[in-house]
Image 1 (cartoon, helix red, strand yellow):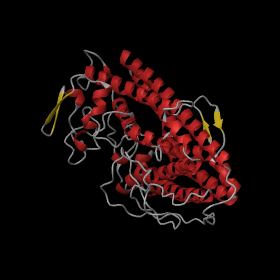
Image 2 (cartoon, rainbow, N blue to C red):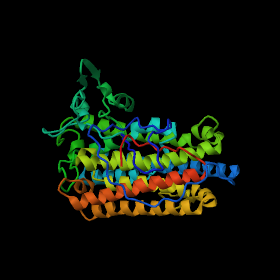
Image 3 (cartoon, rainbow, N blue to C red):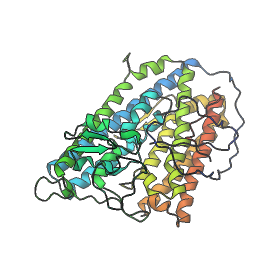
Image 4 (tube, rainbow, N blue to C red):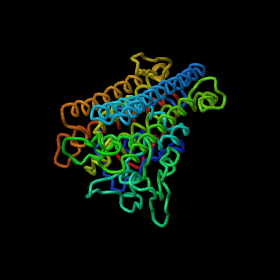
Length: 448
């Protein structure tokens, strides 16, 4: 799910442009307090209409952007297939070893996927599709058993429906037949009864099914679902193992199918797909989409929805990968995706690196100082995200950093938010250097 902010840097405007799309994210119900942004010296604004931008060079940058999208979505699909294979192995032989292997495949699948999210903003084909794959946070009681003291979203009639335990679920006055668990049926239950907390499909539904609830609060540890929850017949724990098996299979297969669909949207020489429409637009429109996507993920989504909301509420329910405690990696690779687009490079899961014409090269030609500042900001953001990764690797994950009594941990998160805010200001300066005024990155109504 998404959320988004606005901040006090003079170069930014307050209203997000119509390209923004955050349908799968939930809006925060908590009051937002302005975090103190780090002050940075900004380069002078570029002229509104800089001379010398070559249309052919700009078109090459947009075309390479499409190549980057194709590569990263292809990797996400390939990693999804590996996850599918690991899930099939778990279901064929439910042991702690096969469960751990499936979890590791899920974690690996997040690496390329989180680098795709920079393509959401400004590209409706991605944003309209993304909610079925990455909607969060979710009321997991819709899917399976939960602890007795489970705190679900207020006013959500589907919060404890438990599809796995019931062939029919009642939501308000409606009775829904879920006897047959299929990807199509599960997808139809997303946002059931109008609640964005009802998430039945995607990475986080799979995550919950592999880890179970994380009942450790802001203490160490992730979910601890036993492999016996997938045993057929005697030895089944958690009840209804046959339906849980069917659910995990259906939701994983749907994920792979959805990823395959998006790969098709970015293939070259396909006159009816999204890539064809993108490259047919003016190069200026393509550059705007690239920069808008970078700024909106940087500011509203990552700094705001995924970090600021959880930090200010000290809420483990609002951390991104809450069942697996993988949030630090998801944040890191979101930031990596922004860097990929600006530099025109992406390291693929096979270890090779795709490079090509970049926004950086265009900005360098117009305003070398602006390019230098943005590169520095991207490096600073990556360093701040690495602090979160190192902390998790040393035993203190994101949910522990945001604990109300962890001042040192909270400061690490604030530093990352501050780096993202300054990075977004530099992205706007880069847009101005290319003659793109009023970029207005999506703020998700947050203030920084």
